[in-house]
Image (cartoon, rainbow, N blue to C red; front, side, top):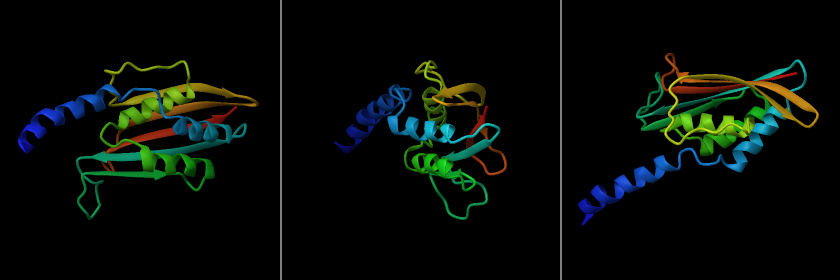
Amino acid sequence: MRAFFLYVAAPSILLTALATAHAAPAAELCEVLRAFVRAVQPGQTRSFAFRTSWGTNFKHAQEQALSAKRCEHGGDPAAQAVCAYLMQHGQTELADATVMDSVACLSSSTTFDSSLRLHHAELSFRHEAINAAATVTVTFGEETEQGGMVFRLQAEGD
């Protein structure tokens, strides 16, 4: 009976996860990202980097791991809030889904097809809010020094 579950149920679970990978982003993610961009003053630049590794730990890590994540915020309170969310909810296996969700949060007219997979991306767009505007730059790709993937988001106040 146990083998039946593994062969029948496991593919169903995987297909369900893949089918929902590009659903609407979580409201909480959008809230912390918008607060991060709103915190940028004219002429100021803020950023964070969310690093993920699937199938192994980061390079130079002593312990073995199936997955790992880190987030660099540089002490910025708004970036710390984003990092806290990503460390709890950010995906490691499908790290590109977190990137696409983040872009969809900050560029509301942007949508991604459910079959799309990102391996490398560099995007720049404007995010406008009441009394504030910023140029947002998103990069995503393989990180050779630490291993895994890195998602960087930078907001530059206008």
